[in-house]
Length: 235
Image 1 (spheres, rainbow, N blue to C red):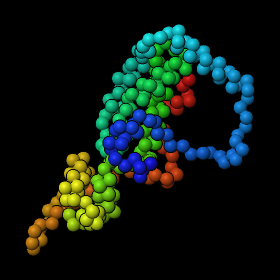
Image 2 (image 1 turned 60 degrees about the vertical axis):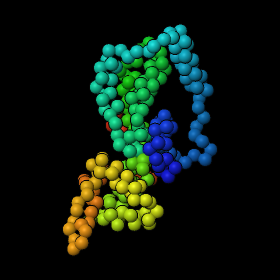
Image 3 (image 1 turned 90 degrees about the vertical axis):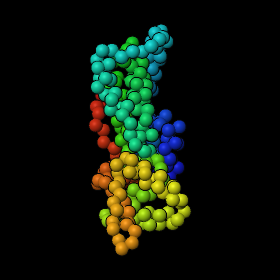
Image 4 (image 1 turned 180 degrees about the horizontal axis):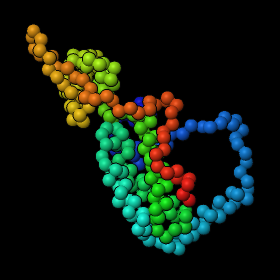
């Protein structure tokens, strides 16, 4: 995923239409788990059929009730706030996903309006999806050149000179391409440039502006943490 989905334009055009969910199996069951009880499965099917019938009999707009609207007003600013780089592109449809999930919960509940509990469940699931994206992609920018420079700076306390930055790409990037990547990092306030006097021309040195934001590295075995209510608590 990190190798193939490494540019913001890919995420903007396709990836943010999906929900990313990091999962880890709890058991190794070569022959599967216990068989689902037939009566239980029939009961679940009946509930789904009932919800579908209710939805067909009540066509039209499914609005939020008062409590849900109040919750939505409080949570919408954070959901719709822009983020930088690849993380921002992958989560750009947060508010749309939350509303759609809340709608699904309301319909399955046979409700004629989205209630607060439906929205809470949707926000909990979205929060886990959001943390899953951070778990996989971390601080990626969606610009491979900017990612290369930023990652190099994280292991270079003294910073990097312009020559050091160009050497990262083994001269396979033009000056314009390197400058564009550095400009993106400067624009987001993630790096600083200082001028150091020498016996000749001053040396420009690039440093991290602040300690990098700590996120779990991909594949370290740490699952995302849920900070919203558990969706399973809301039916």
